[in-house]
Image (cartoon, rainbow, N blue to C red; front, side, top):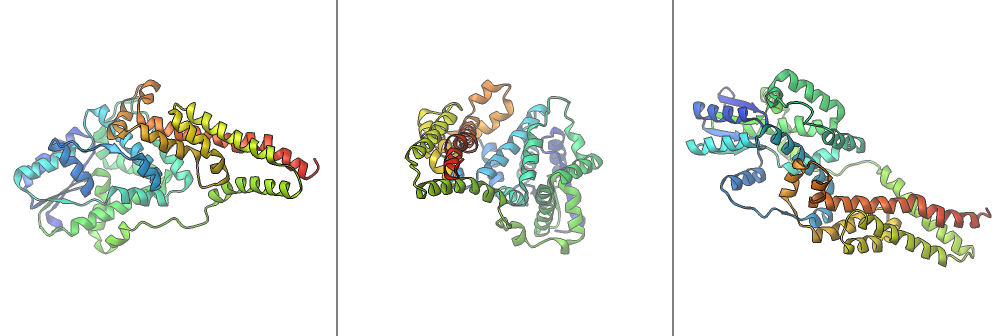
Length: 386
């Protein structure tokens, strides 16, 4: 690619004006190649939609939980919800400008280059760089954003001054996300453009990436190696949260053992522990609207998950619930259209997550309040003569 022959079109991803701008530029310039900000998976999905090919939109929640991809799934779901909601407000489907670029390129017989990094790689790298506080801020910031309070002017998002203000705010609130979603992808997109063999190229990217891409193209030596940008590293450091959470069940076990070796009859206390745990796991699940089977599973595993700090009863009741509630892409899209709790109640994603959360809350109440007051504090008092 020759830099002087490169035309970068910065778009707003849910803008009707961007769609026309992209098409007009491609027809007018007629480049040797059209580069678009998509990876292969998203490109394939768009192409199938364009060709009227119906995909199996069933989402395996079981697989997501077993592969420990719950955080990744939740972030993807929230982002999809937010983009769909904005798209509904302006009556433009997300990704329409990419569809426009594909249609124009195919009409002129121009090959397409996919220049973006795999979306899962990007999100996993972002999650790995986020602290717990960053994750809370990120989810809260997106979920409390109300697009109904004011008219949306999507074209303002392409204004460099307003874009800089938006990105600076994002950088201050969640620097880890900003680094991965903005800086890293700027570098990846620029590197992908440099690897295109043709001279004359039209690149269609989000307006937020255009300044960064240009900076990297001005200084290609500053672009990190592709392998480095695609690498997913495990988070380092001491997992203090997990350590603290582990101390509670360890304390329970220690009290049981001390009481036993001190000659105290703990049979009744063990029955109490099992009964209270199972009851709270069952109630938390069933009161969250689960199937009776899910509630039974939540109750049965509750005593074990209290003792094992890395397990959560809610995941087991949620996995069971997922067997009876098939989650589809339409459930994610439906999150953008709810007007009240009734709509959410009929959304399978919401129902499964509600069961997970409800079961975990109930078991947490048992762990932090009921069991200490009814089982372990009385045992402790017997041990030390209180």
